[in-house]
Length: 253
Image (cartoon, rainbow, N blue to C red; front, side, top):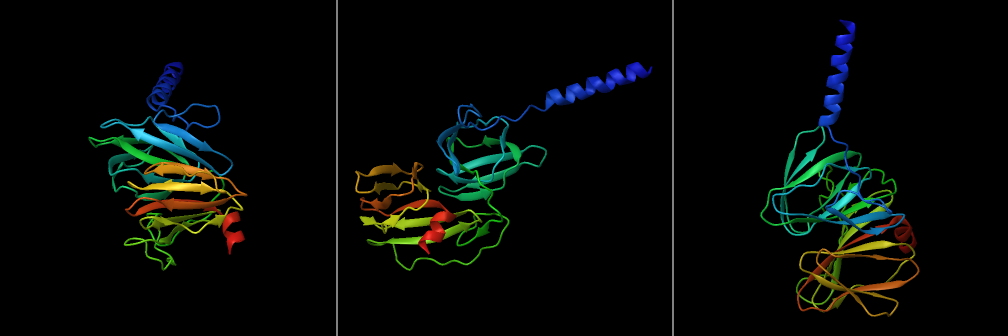
């Protein structure tokens, strides 16, 4: 009788394990991962992925071990199904940006007739407590001090900087460029990431070299020790996100 009970316990334990698949990792190094996440940049600070889920499709169950920032590329209608938690329905605007704590596994289901696209930026160093600045990047936290650049960048030439988020290790800014405008040239004592937003088309110039063009949803990593400027050569406004790290901030103050 005791042997039969133990056999039943073992059977049901194995059955439960079979029903809960192991979350897939995200690709890193030479290791493959969840197939909708395409690794584009990897270094000591970030892993940046371009994510695309076809209409009415979904990702595999996958694991996020690190805190990350995601940027919606185009509007989206998705379900965020976190393992062992209630599902959440998200309706995202083009360019909507959020910070998410790591340490969970989930499935993203696309409810739309259009592809669900986003940029997922894993932050590989500890971030401490994130603080919103001018935008609600951390959904559960209040807005913080908002020290916007006074320069207008909507009606004519010029640029403005709108701080979005700060952590113990990183800072996220929204930079707006007016038509036919260029941001201030800055030195790069440390690395940062540039993400073009919406239907923007921007050019990134390093040390006088020919510019690299980024369209909305494209991104580039800028190495330290160079001088960079970001320009909008078109006749309509443009915008980009700039994710920089604390070495850059302290050196520029």
